[in-house]
Length: 321
Image 1: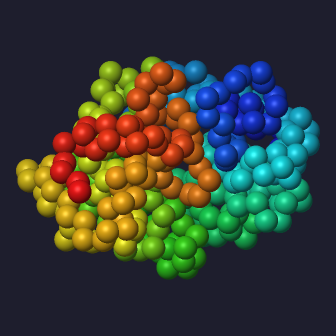
Image 2: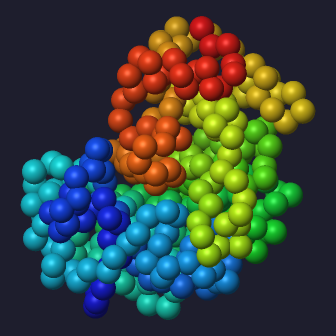
């Protein structure tokens, strides 16, 4: 039984449930199940110990809406092609998992083909299987903190345990498992890139986020990552996603010093700015998830202009092509 579902503000716009006029419309419908997580991730608005507004996740608001009000607009959005993916963010709260499973089944009644992603804490391989059996296309198991030094301090859970769940799930369900990492939590660029490479070696799809300080969380006063750091990580991550090797990337004192790109086609894509677009599942552009409108995007939710691509490469402080 689904009572209320958190719906991202951008998704409400796409479904015609508010009057906002965003510059970029999200191609994925984002829903959140549950509030007030039992875990205490220090960066998260839903974490135990956070005093953020109850309907927040990252800097996005998620007003609660009934399924009866959502079902028809969602069906129309899927039929028109404006909604090309559905993503469920499942908070570790009582009742959230059954509600998410019920929501997947309801969406499958609308469409048997729309891709459905589910993001859950990597605590159990068997639980990931429940979502896939219910009709999810893929399951996201976020590691978040790309540093064994900092992971338990920030998330309150074991770095090794998270990787063990990710590894086993990727073996059981090849090409159906995702993860994401948050840059700017105190890790070095090298730690981040090596974690991305490790996930890629498992066949896991990787999404990259920039840390966003949210008022009311224990990390509200921590600064977002320097844009140069983020651009270098984006470049390395994109190379790895396109078949590149860690051997292409040189580090000095934990910083990315050089990236050698022997593939001309990959070099062309980078010069066009593809590395700086939103990463992760297909058709997920997540506009303004990491930044406010008017700011230079950390993750561009659309193809870049030639000038934007040049500026991103300059921001990276690396010589590419």
